[in-house]
Length: 110
Length: 123
Image 1 (cartoon, rainbow over the protein chains, first blue to last red):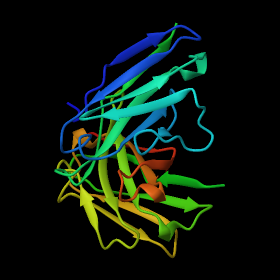
Image 2 (cartoon, chains in turn red, green; image 1 turned 90 degrees about the vertical axis):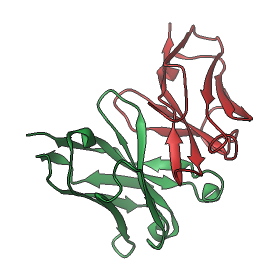
Image 3 (tube, each protein chain N blue to C red; image 1 turned 180 degrees about the horizontal axis):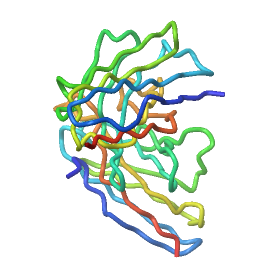
Image 4 (cartoon, each protein chain N blue to C red; image 1 turned 45 degrees about the horizontal axis):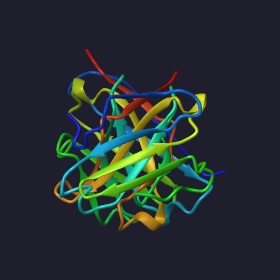
């Protein structure tokens, strides 16, 4: 049981937009920034978004994110086949004195 | 090239010990906070432990507290995770990860990850 809640799966067709949600509580998302990472099959995770809505250099602007209250979301626009991966949200949790992750959302590009 | 390379994983019996290493290169290792994150087969990411730049501040997930110890040797550019009293539920790929410097006090995003090392606890 993960501290942050994500839908287990999402899907879309090439060119479409898809949004993945992440729900937490006042001790994590409610008071701290959210980070998102992408994990392609068989590889290590890769940072996609930090500080709730900032993209590291090299991450396409097709990836965007936002946070409101105790929830956050990641939107991928102009979906491409190479976006098929697992996506995780994460946030610092003051009660646990460490980061907590969502359970991950498996994105399928149909 | 900025890189983290884990080693030390393997098969160990319940109750046994292992020490994982994470060798850093391509950046000033001693300037960065570091974490360990694990992923059980087919499951999601779970935070394990973190240390600040000089090991003066560390923290652990409740599931490993008292059994695992994180440490670092900045002269050797290496992060460690000493794992004792291992249990079947510790079976996972263990990743070391670097904290993006500008996020140390704003959420600690992980901008560099190693490739992971597999730990299997089984008799």
